[in-house]
Image: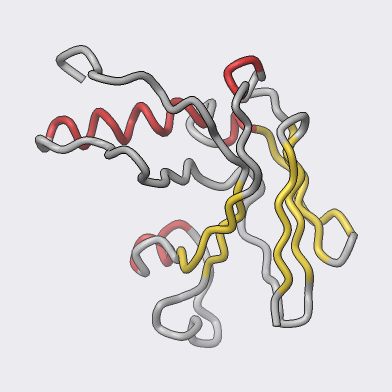
Length: 144
């Protein structure tokens, strides 16, 4: 960052689910959902469901941590922490550097989402989504 950080990484961290959708109310028929359309839509994030705090997250090998995503009890996607910048901490460090280069910083209390380990999965009202993070906890969300 060009200068020493004034504070350490946060003590607690939490597993989370991002609920994504198009700010335009959906994609027109035939428009692919990919990195380009996500960028054009400013990231697709609508809400984040934050799971329980994990105070000892530094003891975990976050890059090797397995993540599974299920819909209504059926696993539909799997990933590892390495699927986000090599490790979720690297994503936070990247953001901190970018902000520092602009004279800004991550402020206390701000939530930093480090990206998807499982990719995008279509969910419809009435389904229940559950993400399990090996040895770190789980997060679930029911859509109505």
